[in-house]
Image 1 (cartoon, helix red, strand yellow):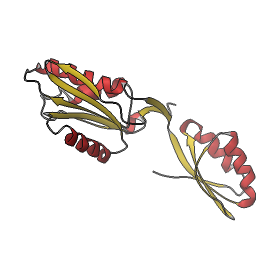
Image 2 (cartoon, helix red, strand yellow; image 1 turned 60 degrees about the vertical axis):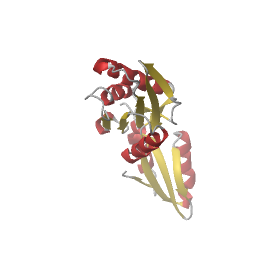
Image 3 (tube, helix red, strand yellow; image 1 turned 90 degrees about the vertical axis):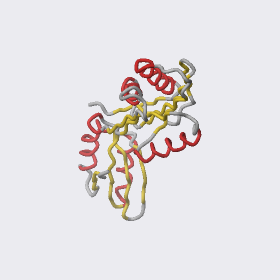
Image 4 (cartoon, helix red, strand yellow; image 1 turned 90 degrees about the horizontal axis):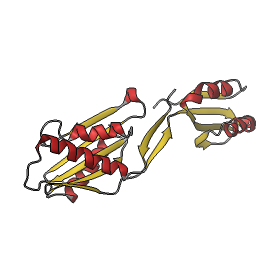
Length: 204
């Protein structure tokens, strides 16, 4: 079972590709929603208010069957900008990412082939300037139990190096944990087998 994905942790350094006096500035941003993508685009439109085009592609989702994506040519010939940018997202196998390439027109037309190459290269340069990391796909659960069961619960958490997201410890204890997808069945059964401990999945 594939339970990892690749993404970036912070915006990339600005990348610059030049062709026949046109300048293509490439940027990558970590995102988790389309609204976040819109905010970054708006900021770049302000920063590069004299540019001609702000072309982009984004993809969000942790698993292939859940991916959402969009590619935008922003006035360039159809499929000459957004899709070449998106092609680099696929090539680098990254997700939860926005890549924007800002173009300043240099007075010489590049043709569709030249544009595809320029947008692809600027996107590739932005990704090469990014720190790409691998993350695990986790599912979240809540454990509910009384205080006397604390020791046995914490022992299982420690044995399996489970990530505690939040805890509310009183007489009635609640611990929120993240379990790596491939380990879910094993860990779930382990907690289910402990007397007086209730485990429930938290739906997103």
